[in-house]
Image (tube, rainbow, N blue to C red; front, side):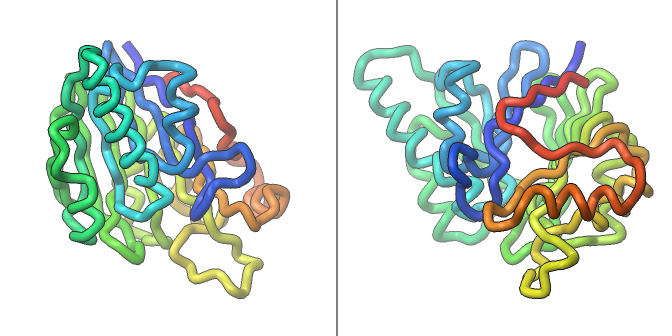
Amino acid sequence: MSIKIRIMGFSGGYPDAGKPTSGYLVTYGDSNIMIDCGSGVLCELQKYIAISDIDAIILTHLHSDHISDIPVLKYALQMKKLHHQDIHPIDVYAPKTPENQLAGIMGDDNLNVQTICGDSSIDLMGAKIMFRQTKHSVECLSVRIEYEGSVFSYSSDTSFDPEFSGIFENADLAIMDCGSLDNDPYSNRNHMSPRECYSIFLHSGIKRVVLSHLIPYYNISDTIEEAAKMGYWPYEIAQLDTEYII
């Protein structure tokens, strides 16, 4: 058995032209798990599965670029139910804060919202899923999924933390926040640079790295240039609809 990870969106902050913000479809066994659901993600998702085939959603944090398609999803489920389609409630796992953002997600019969925190661990349809709080401007959680010997790790949004490597230990695939550049003097450092992603790779035993959460006003060539300064390492730049099998 294996884990499949498909990129539904990878822009950071706001969608670039034709490039939705954060969203990843994780499939293992017969289960379809969404991690984050940013602007434009539902449009991409339906190329591969129906909305009714979503089994669970993990929201790593409640910034708009990671949750903005949730209200659209709620409306879609309501419309389908009104037309007597077979809709099952979707389990949603999300941080407790900011409270006003969480309140906007809750209160819908079609979403079963449960809160998670930095030391949470859940068993979800045969997979062990662990969370760890990141260094970000709001409560934010990284994700590690273990399923039948395969490991997928996702940093979500974070500034660099030298002790952060544990969530990535021996991961077959790691998707990392690379929303910053060392050569940007105006960066607020809420995100990692290619050099910082490389540092985590170096200390974690990761087999393959995808640099994601790419800010639209940066040139991709600058991200590649900074990553290349580290010499050879198994990184690539996130691309829409790419599927990884681990």
